[in-house]
Image (spheres, one colour):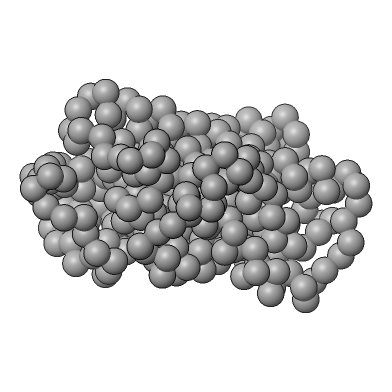
Length: 311
């Protein structure tokens, strides 16, 4: 088997988790840096156009890999899952970029910490996972944290919050598909597919709001694409070494990065209630992640004992 094929790390080992955690932290930093650039471009280009260009440049990130390994490296028995995942990821991307246009970076990222809650709901609805009363209670607490951030009736409502939550729903779907795909394809192939297939999807939306970008904007768009491409590669790599639920809490570190970027580059900083709401969400989602990780440990069998799951 070539070194580009999928591999399965020993489940439950400390070294496996540390590798997954390291790749997750790298993906968080890369994603957050790209979000800062999107915020920088707000008002100049439509978010769907930014999403289109980020996908074009993200795919270019994989061209050297394709040249080195050949088109055969893209061979997959699960193309249909890649195709569906690309629709979910494109929707999540466009919703998120729109939210960054409408909402301060720190506030948007704080509310986006609800991601694990959506991931749990997706697992219940589409994977048939059984959830006990304590995890349902944690989901409810997380929802309260989201309301603390939004503060309906007390603050002027931001439409960006709706796009954050919608993006969280779509993002949960793409993560479940990514976890399935790592059983069959390499991280590079998964990342290349999602970048390539999203190009026509986002272009179909961007064409209605097209504005010719300047040279400076193109350079920033290229930076977004390269950062996102690298982030997807490291994120999928993390899923090869650790369960999604085990590394999901590490995504909370993006709030720190977002607050720093917002403060130094945009004179934005989350207020006290945003931090309080984020803390409530982090507590709830950490509990959910720990419960899912424990349940996964009980259910887990050796890859040699059972075939890879279907879609």
